[in-house]
Image 1: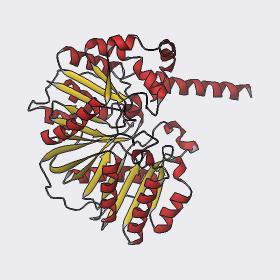
Image 2: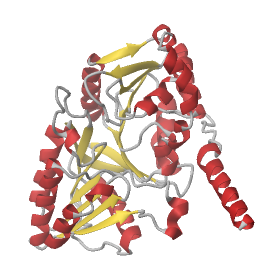
Image 3: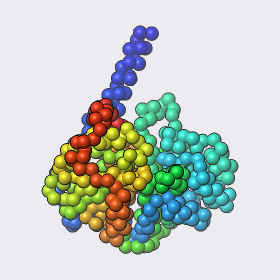
Length: 417
């Protein structure tokens, strides 16, 4: 019995060390290259092991009352297949609308697949899942808690992705839940951004949707109902940033580092959880100190993760002193995950500026090289700034005493959030 106790203590110690104290990768560029340079496209494509797709159409939707109707309309007009992957699929009025639309398509004989994260959508199981399966939808749970997968318990699918007929895709920060669609008292719905994609990029997004479906049930999706021929639909150059913890140096982190350090004029970041590691904090400070305007919008008091906000705020001093501008959104919880560089490049999707997104989760983002799309996202950013409170270094120093005391004790979230 003593040996079992010792073995258990050793295992728990190892688990804590791995989860909390694994050293960060010291990300840095061997030599800075501008996002405007001719070699930048090739650097991104090669380093992130992704393919550039030209001739795409991108439509930006701001907040649930815009993107949910567009997503539901796409599902209801599907003729061949519907594939969804969600971290959050929470029972409620919005979930009922999606369940009805998905069920209708399945009853019409379409191939409908749904992957939900076992933890993020844990309370979907029961009547909602029975309704979907009774209609003919196939639904799988990603990374269920099983004895043989405990080593991967920290790996969640944080992706929010919808692909219809292999021709239309939606990606962004929002899952399926009422808090994105309906006000709570006087508080508006959550602020978020989703995008619809048409054109060659959709095949790459379909491949991402097929990836975790394969992992869940072993089925390889094939055929023209999933992978049709795709014609040019617009003028946007785009690439998919598929990120997974199978390699700690994830493509999303590499992409963010390359784009931020490649900025010549400005970096605009919207993120709900801002916990940059030491290497990224150093990069942001160096970017600001060489004259680039670096601006970050994060949730204010109306955040859904108060401890994370505390952990974030404790590290702002050096950033503010270096010239990084930080703004807290006041109106409601902001969950938008958008990066815009020099009004030329944009990235949107599911990745937060934190270690969990960069090292532990399956994530999906789309990088876009299009001034018109960047301008559309910057218009949203400017409106969000008008609803935000700017945090100065002097104000940060005057934060409440209790926050200064508690802050150092929530450092643990810097590794796990």
